[in-house]
Image (tube, rainbow, N blue to C red; front, side, top):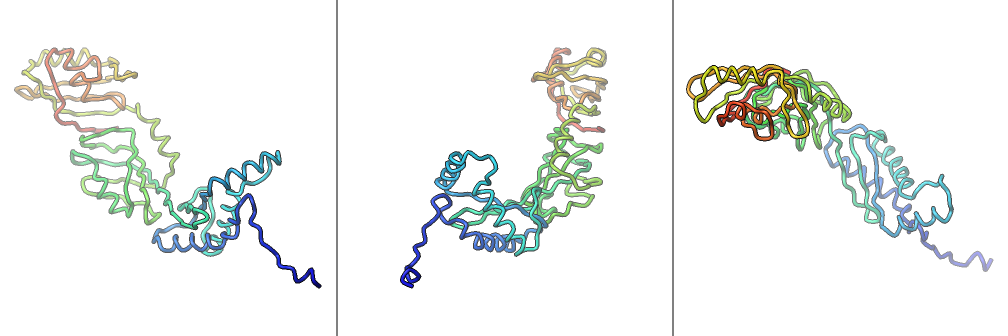
Length: 303
């Protein structure tokens, strides 16, 4: 009887420091943060950040036990908190989640990472200038938007339909935008995509495209000189950095005075501006003609 009256002294685990007692509190904090975020999601994942001394003690114990099958404290905490969050929210735990919740222990502070939404389709840019990304992000309910495309159009108009993958960053909804105009950007036939589609799209960088440009020369060239330059460049590969690009077709049509229209078909990724002024590209229109030239305007006609 005397032994039953002895008080029991609780001793903290020398490895985890009692972090497992915070699992329920952490799960409630995650569920609360998710609910307060106003973000639409159907799947989630949980991660934790732990004190350095806990990670060090866990690693040391694993080394002393000389086992390869043990589960780390971090992974077990992620699993337990995730199971409780799933029970509290009714959302699915997933390895490809819509939302990632990171819990800092022992403070039980939570940060949410909303994973991007991807949409594959085509676009046309009807006016010159930078992409209207802020307007596009606002219309899609995202913090920001990234447009992935093999084409680097800069200030050019894109009058043909160019392939793209739209990346909506920190979206409040998991739905994808519908087709139509956003400012001067026309979105065409969008469908749900993934990060792997971005990588596939990069493989199309060398696909041929047709360009139309307005070229301004320092002094007026004659028609014969422009024809000679076109004949020299057509079918030739030009050096561009470490790569070469094929000029499949070139036409230079005088417009009067110092201006000429350039019609070019070449491999994707070719620097039309460099092909005109010779900066970073050789041979160039300026170099072959012997007259300084610069590209004033550019349209991408097809891809």
